[in-house]
Image: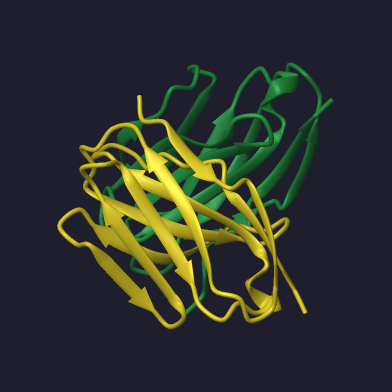
Length: 113
Length: 110
């Protein structure tokens, strides 16, 4: 069974640009969660999608948004990039919504110059 | 807001030692708690998930305990191996999200 796939693996952008990251969950998993990992703040929850609906949201500004498609694939978008958005963005899939075993992808490393 | 602390931040042990990693959290109203390992430059791998009604969960050489009322969990690793070298994170689930600790970086010396 294929694992969680995140694309692209690495990304370099400049301030003010926008970026879209993609996450394909394990087949059969309907929940996708997104996390931001930085050396200073650690791992922080961004949002969770289940059955194409955002179910929970972390404490991030509205520049961070996401969506989930009918095949459970998910995208995360960050608009008007800031230097502080440089981070490893991880997505995790699970069978059920909320509190289930999380299966993580390898992440997308975003650098904002 | 849930605050999660992991002690020690870093640990270096010789191969074969048994060791304990500690995790404490401020809000005891949790549904479950997961332990993960993260290898450099990679995503996280779930090791164990303990439900709030459980006291212990075991998988191979790993044993995790949970004392919900005191806001503590421990991960016990028996007979450590160099392949256990990684960062270990705990994450209690409060009903809306997992809150992650800052992790314990473990190095097992051959």
